[in-house]
Length: 139
Image (cartoon, rainbow, N blue to C red; front, side, top):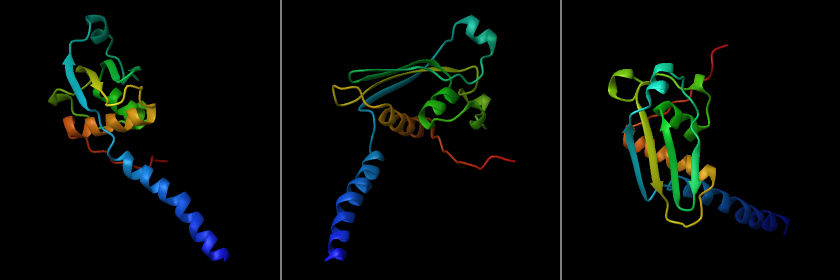
């Protein structure tokens, strides 16, 4: 009887967790635009490092203003500046290139920050063919 109870408990607890993980892979924006934008002269002159951009979540709209690609990666993957490496400067995605993201989701409520991160990951993979490889840090 205890074994049957344990199996039933495992099915009730583990199945929803697995379903949540599977659903996370399918979280995407309904409509999204990433467009290159011209940064103000004072921003370009300062040669800013990879800044963490603010993410506006209002109703069904997500907006990220004036950010570099590395900033979008930092938001999407919750990593520090030192953890983003090997972004080529010569392909329109380097430190001198700035972008704006404007996206819509299906629901009228603002998505959670975790869902926003998952959607940004999917968008970066689709639009920039971003491939992420996690490496242990050197001692």
